[in-house]
Image (cartoon, rainbow, N blue to C red):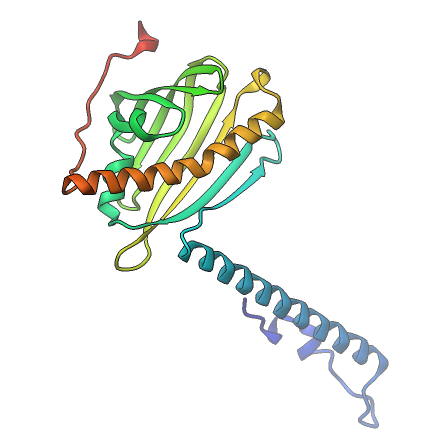
Length: 239
C-alpha cells in the first residue's frame, strides 16, 4: 500500500502559518489528522504483510490453507483454499480435467460424466454422496486452458443439492511445485440444517487437496501423466 501526501489537500493547501510564522490551531488539528491517517495506513500495510508471510510459511510446510465465508445474501458457505502440489502445471491440469477419473479420487464423487460441449461450455452430469444423501445434478464447466482454471456452475438436478459453483486454478510457484486454489459453494436447501451443511463442506474441503496430491503421486509412479481423452455419455436428464 502506497500513501501519497499529495492525495490529502490539508497537506498542500491548508498548512499555512499565521502572520507571525506560527502554526494555527486549525493547522495543528489537520496536521494531527494527517499523521493519524498515515499511521493507520502503515499499520494496515504491516498487518497485511505479516499475514501474507504467515500464509506463505504454512504453504511451505505443506499445510492446506482453508477459509469459509458465508455469502452475504444467500448465506451459502464459500470455502476457499490453497495448497502447494509437487508437480508441473500440466500434470495437475491433466488430473483436474480428467472427468472420467473423478469417481476414483475426488471426495464424495461417484461419477462425473461429460454429456455435451458447446463453444465455451462443457456440460457434465454428476452424482455425489453427502453423508447418507445422494444427489445427481448437471454442471456447466468453462475450461480455461490459458489460465489453467476450471469454472463450474449449477444447471439442474435432483436430490438435495440446489446450487453448486466454484473454480479450481493452477499457478506456477517454483521449479518443482505449483499453487492450487480451490473454491466452491454448496447449497443443500431444506434437506440439511445450515450448521451441518457448513460442517460437511469444511470437513470435505481439505480432503480434496489431499486426494489431489495422492492422485498425482500415484499417476507419476506409473509414468508420465498423459493428457486425458474427453469422453461423452448419454445425458440422463434427457431420458
